[in-house]
Picture 1: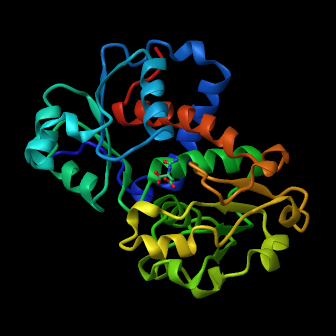
Picture 2 (picture 1 turned 120 degrees about the vertical axis):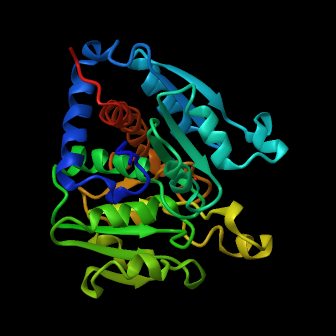
Length: 307
Ligand code: NCD
């Protein structure tokens, strides 16, 4: 029926396609002037049903830097969603105006549902509830490629809210496709990695612990995350867990000299600001990779090339 490509979950692209996106992102970083007009006449709809800083700004900047234009909302209270319009009706309408849409939604599966009713417009999942966030994963992988120069043979500690952290779920799915990648899932008992993510891994691929200090020395990458307050039913439970892990300079002393610290941001308390000065802390550089990789993604889904 329709064969438009969407980007809803990390597995929607093969490893080889990821490599192509990363090569394109590299070229955009090196020679941005070649790309100034490639999306001229194209319109990106930016549909943010949940708050965002980096994801929305980087997508909108990406489209503008490719010579395209942007329409949309950053708060659904300004759209007909506030009147009770269904998501499917909203996106079917948007499809009449825009060439591509990026959507963040509090409900797991919402971008996938929306994509099923599309006939011309690719949809990009910019985060669906506590489920997945595949474009953060592209950002994370481009960062890993830059600092580690490989995706194989890595020990990756993911720390914090593994239950609700969609960036983590996506990262684990994507990185588990490479050779000899071992995960250390570091969280309090209440915020453990959900079974539906663990079930896709071999038992030998991961270890679970609640003690960051005792494992930090083994890691090539430490991926920190905030406790996802908005997904908690009880504020009391959130308050109990919010400061469970704090990465500080003292803990960093036990880490390898070439370990990198990543974080999708926003950071709340989980990384002390003193760590920002450590050259192993790459989370602000990570945000810049996010824009370039989203430029490459938009070009790929719109099938546009440099003339
Ligand atoms: C993340 C998200 O929205 O899931 N932020 C982001 O996109 N960089 C992480 C978070 O909100 O904790």
